[in-house]
Length: 138
Image 1: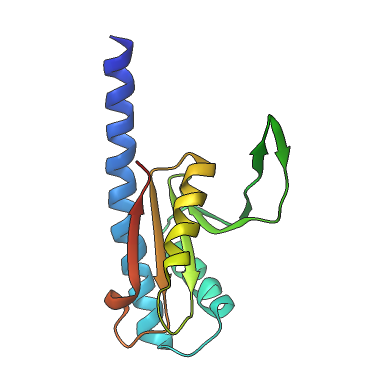
Image 2 (image 1 turned 90 degrees about the horizontal axis):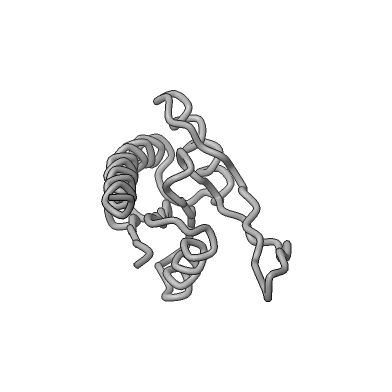
């Protein structure tokens, strides 16, 4: 019975994360529509946070992500750009093109955070739909 309740909770969290990802994409599209490509990542982060706030979506910025090594919690300087409603990890980019290291970084962040859904949003594209990646842990 306990396993079934846990499965239902995980399913509900994943459904909520999935819904949030659509809201995050909508907010990012709004930011990209107003700013276009070519700015620094920090400008997009500031504007996306503003847009998420306007939409009533809770988030945290620059969330420290400690590394557990042999039972020790180490602060190695890793930070999540955004953590939306404690469910979705969002990494922002303003790069020429996605690189495999971006996916590897996100998967690592998801594992360290024990999170299911991550999004990489690259604002340096003509159409934002070409700059969005969703990755899942497991």
